[in-house]
Image 1 (cartoon, rainbow, N blue to C red):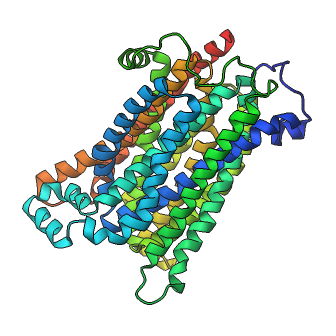
Image 2 (cartoon, rainbow, N blue to C red):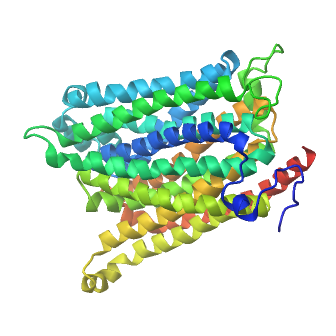
Length: 507
């Protein structure tokens, strides 16, 4: 199973090779890249916790499926089309700034303009209730209309992960790092970024607990949003400054970047048109398999988290309580991720690509089966759990949290790194446009695929009974689909592994 040792790679002591396989002069590249990842991941994690607190506590976890399917996915497709066209017109550096800036502007406006005046921007609760009574089959979509600005916040927070992490950061890393560097540096980037999860956990909990110090009549959630979203905007600006520093000080150092052109600099030859590029991308078996991995991950995590968040809403109906719990969950995810990244970095260096890539779907499969099984039989455990001083809902929240922490830390440490390494053998145009299609649209199709499954189950239940079903009532159907998706995921990893190893041999 061990891979062949590359004699061109730098030699380190055994302990240094396990914990820190980066040479001194390479820190000039590794540290700023790690900080870019740190700030982008901090913002994404902070926004992810806030978006769930806004939508779940004000509408219900069931609404998330409709939001992902009918809002997030079309927005991702639109973004991909614009981004692909912009990649032909802008240099790589300017493309990054143009991508990041609109997000920062909206989140700043949301904190200080939109949320304080939400009663002006949103329809009244009485109007929404009347619409729902008139059209019960559209109960959840109408509920989202009543909190539409929260929905926009949710969409942009979701797109942040696809566009700034999966696309912009990793595309840049793939352009400036060779495969031999990636095997050593990518885990280090991830390790630095995971410290942001600890930071989010501490800052998020502090900002949520600040309600105990607000003056009478003040909205504690408004205070929380002001602090957290101000931090998001500041960190976004810092990210752009570091990105600029990398261009001016790192990519001009021949030891760290030896290509004749800067990444994304427009070439004189005419680039393929958008539709021609999309046709090439969509007919590529290599990219198709990467997309399948992304889609299967999106569906499986969506099925687990949707059910888990429905239990979380029952346990923590208040926004600040919900965000406090999610912040602590993020903190523990960060700790687990750092441990997994140390392990995963060594797995990547010692074992074949396919062996490392298989670990994530196997962890998801085992964890998901445990969680779904508990939910199916949780009512039978009421008496036993009562004797232990707890209840099925709280245990479902804790079990789900533990499984999500383990699964996501594995995803950050192995799934993300192996997926990004799979892009490195591709040419520059496919790295940019192919990655836009796979990570932005494929990622959204994955989550919307999970949302579609849930929407269909909810809709069929409503049509048959005339009453909107709960998550608990559709669990057996979600369980079956989850197992099928995990099997497809494992098979796709094995198929892609053959192509990745063949591509590496040609380099």
